[in-house]
Length: 334
Image (tube, rainbow, N blue to C red):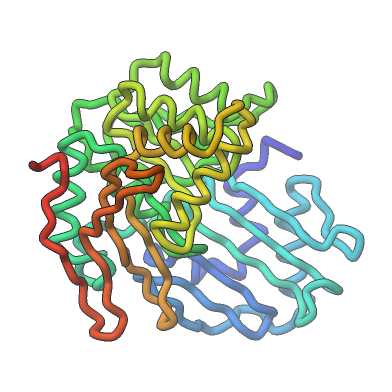
């Protein structure tokens, strides 16, 4: 792959998309064939006028963009992924596997990230939940941010991490650049590279770099086990993410990832490690109307008879469309 591609070359190739890219409120662009283009703006999807008059024009943009990196998409290799110089992500699928014509999705990483005020304005999270999270960060609680696909969990995790005091040193470890933190003392480590650095090796390096807060990107492999061990052994105020369909499902997935590490631990020991490393779990979801909401917040109070003791703190009621709080006092505030 050509690592010397300049932003100017990319701008030239994607010129038909200039009017859309110029709108800084656009977070993602989804080109579903040359006739339909959707954008995500202010947390909502909306259709905009397509700049393409034919599938061939769209294909030319895809060929030009991927060609800059020495990648040719065709019937033998119909799917391609790119990370652009500004860390934006690009995914393309071409015929015959893309039945309706070429498809292209561009997702900005560094860009118009929502603020807490915007999320509260949009109804993604209530003010009371924000206050709860801010107090948890101040109390140096370890937080697991979970969510379904495209639910906004990465955005939520970045915003939560930004609540750390400005004088603290926040070290972010990721497989790939995803979280766009604005914290003034953010240090980033990324796995991979020419050395093929593993996430476990990147985590070990981060711990040796004196973090005040350790932020670990999406847990998706056996490195979840060492991450939890760090969280439970003095690295309080840490944060990580995991895919899940509920708070309970996120914890089950976390167990499975730890078992993948093949540490010779049984389920009881794994659950004890989870309970020692995590004190608060949030769950994000994208609802049928396209809105993203933090629909659950629960405190993990420990284990009882080898089962997690979860204290619900907030839940979104889909019937009433209201956020409901239990008024239970979290352990760190008692």
